[in-house]
Each structure stands twice: as structure tokens, then as C-alpha cells.
View (cartoon, rainbow, N blue to C red):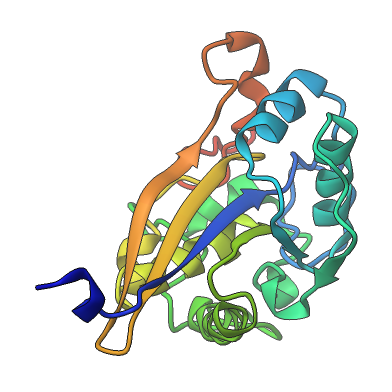
Length: 232
């Protein structure tokens, strides 16, 4: 096929960054609770700032820990963007009355092998199911794919939100997305290719941690799932 006959492919590159660790949760589930995060590990943010593309469109959730994380990346030498849009639909799952419960005791009460707080269709009491999170994340990603088509998009968000985005990139196989670890400050890259004929996602990297060679920064991994140990 001659080059002139090839369809015009537009590539939108998503760079998802999970927020920095939350240290003041008391060992409890926090979900959409608006807690601060710890951005003191400058080595980590220097590494993240070097990896992210310049001239990107920045987005974040409406929760302060994503804004603090973005500020730490900019303080590490990434050129501060002119703006960063806050998207409430990129917030973490609303875990309702589970928020504030001891995480280790809650995990111990769930079926062995569970990879999330509950089945993807089970809403937290007074809150959302993972599918609720997935659907609002999908709608927002699809909208941004239109408004920022062909650009690099940096989205500072949450572990659940990034897993929801992975579910979209896996053609809606949401359950499979829960198998991925998404550590604090890690980068997940998802590329969206679209043409008049078809659209497709690719996953160049998931949970990439440019600081990982140095064990001194291992606290970016905070156990939150089945590996959480029950308190004595």
C-alpha cells in the first residue's frame, strides 16, 4: 500500500502516575478520604521527573494527594505546566462505610485470593463498586482522548483509577486489570491509536519505577491487598 493511501493514525500517549504514599491513614482504608501524602523522598521524584514527557497535558483527580504529588514532580525539575485540570471522576473508588476500617482486618475477612476490596460488581456500603469506578474513569478517558488527541497526557491519580484505565486498555476485561500492582509514584504508560478504520490500545509499561534499583526507596510499595498482615 502506498504511504499516501495509509489511514491517518492519531496516537495519544497516557502517562499515569499514582500519588505518593499516604502515611497518616492509621492502617485504615481511606478510599476517597482526602488525606495528604508524603512527598519527602526527593530521589523518587527526581527519577519520575526525568521519565515524563515535556509539553504534556496534565490532569489529576480532585483529591489533595494527587496535587501534592504533581507539585513534588515539578519541584524536582519538571517544567511546571501552565495548568492542570482537576477531574473528580479520576478520584479513587468511594469505599463508603469501609473507609476508616482497619485494612488488615478487612482483608482478612475477605475470601482468600481476593485482588480487590470486593467483587467488581459489589458496591461498598454507601459507596461504589469497582465497576462504578471503571465506568466513570472510562468516560473521562474517552473524553480526554478527544480533547487531547495526538498529545502526551500525564494523569496523576490513584491505584484503583489506574487499574480501571488498564481495564479499558484490555478491551473492557476489567477483572484482569486487578491483577496488576500499581505502586506509589509508579508510571503506567497506555497508548491509544485511532484511525478512520479502527482504534486500539497498547500497554508499553505498567508500574514502572525508575528508582527501583536502590533499595533505600522501597517504601513506595505499601501493601494494600492480600499481603497485608493482620494485626496481632
